[in-house]
Image (cartoon, rainbow over the protein chains, first blue to last red):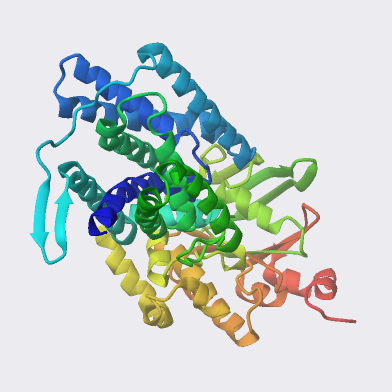
Length: 291
Length: 234
């Protein structure tokens, strides 16, 4: 049971990271980013490509992060901001367009074969024995926990201790009034997209050793990230983190005790149930009004 | 300090402002009066750059019509929005820090001390969520937050709206005090008698045009203003 929870927590931690990226973009710019998973996928391919060119693994990943951040910036600045005045729906359609473009492009460039991606840390799992039984902790899972922890600490400091963080919260509450404060609202939009895009690639790199690199590698994670964000009320970072972890545990239990094939069906069902009965998320966090 | 020449604002087919001219001199309090829908708020929004406008806006000798809102704020033009547009989900302290976005870190502490001296209640409530403050306190927070942006020209949009009379006179005392401390004020108000009492000059707007202008003394004695805005019946 404890091992099931631990396994659930590590998958849940990746859902939390996806949800954090989605929530940051949605909270600040009001856009539901459907291209999230495919942006991550595309830049994992880029990292993979660097590695096949005999570049150091970590350098390859770092370079793909830089390129992904640039792409996130350019996408928001030149494809979404010019149509902001139209409607949120039109921006959502643009993200759909990007989803398809990136998928088509990666199939053209790298084909549909599954490609092996190296683990960032490898080695035998840690095994603990005690009154609770045997506890197995995989190194890759520890890495995922550490990444989530670093992200949480980063966000906590950013949002509570810095002017940029307060500006992010201000813009997400009211863009127009934020601009009266001298806040360059466009820059905050850029930040949210750079952060969101980076989250997508980070998740991609973390799960790639398990999923292998393929055009559909992050579709499942994006769906689970959406569910996690919905569980958390979609506008709350805390909700996104808790939602992801909870979903990971629930889903692992469903997979173990009901059926592994029902995992994604269960997530979709959960989205509907939560939206119907707890539109503000199950943690009851107050939704700020989007003006 | 500020000169607006032939300013027009259109919202689609609606002409909200139909070519107005106005001036604010250094150190003045200038009021814009008029009924709902006259275009007073749109005028302020055009000056700060949050709505598209045609015409010329000159600030300290420089044409600023093409500048973005945050660039105008950097130059010292600050708008304290209508309806106490504070960030309801942020704390009082966070609202003030948002106002100090362009202020350097070393100066923020000094500014906060100054603000808390001016508005002691805000120091008491600094950790409270702004949405839980009373109407008067929210208005004070809105003004205090504007002050954090170091305004040279402070534009106040309906600061007395929805407040009890005793609070209104407190807010107007604060505005006068700020002016004495060297801040030029452009005040939009429906409460014409209070506004004219503290201002040097005034403009009266109706349906997107300026229909009257002059010194506050002249406007207070103007029969039309008396009848329509000051509630004096013959």
